[in-house]
Figure 1 (tube, rainbow, N blue to C red):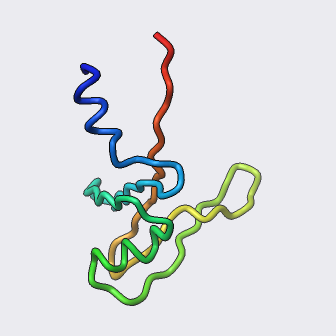
Figure 2 (figure 1 turned 180 degrees about the horizontal axis):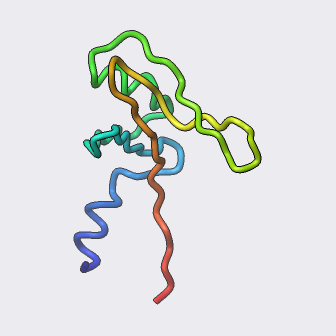
Length: 87
C-alpha cells in the first residue's frame, strides 16, 4: 500500500474521536466514524432504541463486556487505531 492511500484511509481516525467497527455474528461490518459513544452510534445506524450488553467468559472465569445484542443479532465492537510501523 502506498503512502497516499494510507493517508486517505487514516484521515478520519483520531485519538480524541476514535473510529469503531461493529461486527455481527455473520461477519457483516458497520463502520462507526469519529464517535465517543459507539453504543449510541450503533443504535442510530440500526434505527433501534434498545440493546443489551453481551459478555464473554475469560479463562479465569470472570465476565468481560464484549459487545451488544440488538434484536436477534449480536455485535462485537473493535476500536481502530493507527499503528506506527518504523520501516
